[in-house]
Length: 172
Image 1 (cartoon, helix red, strand yellow):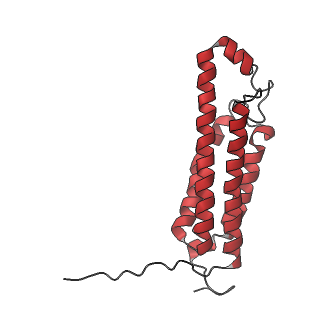
Image 2 (cartoon, rainbow, N blue to C red):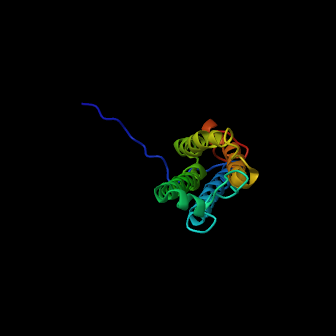
Image 3 (cartoon, rainbow, N blue to C red):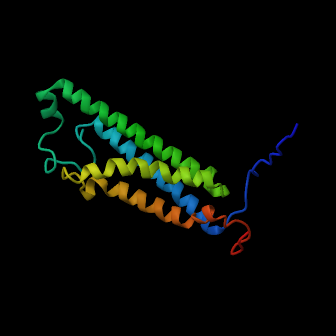
């Protein structure tokens, strides 16, 4: 009978300064997604109703007109706002946690998951804004900013995939 020896990954692997800074920026980007989701959610329950940066220029009716046209449609749109804000916040939370607790420790799986989560979400959500004229800077600007911070962090932390751990400037 044979047994496999298993050596658990240490709780903390020494990482480079770039990986540490990158993981912090990735986490900040994830937290910014949560902030955007909060704005999204709050607007649903205020007179603004429509998403940040969406005005009568992009959509010719607002909360009251939608309600007057169809209470059921209003409730449906409201439920979509709530659901989307929940998924944006959940993605931000997962991304921030993976970056802070995994990427910062040099764990490749955490890096891959932290990058994949927002890429999938944004890859599905963003393209739909363009054909309908909804890709205004007022609407997507904060998401673009959060994504830019996240991407800078992801590039800095990219050494995790290459195994760049250990003493600064030294490769194991």
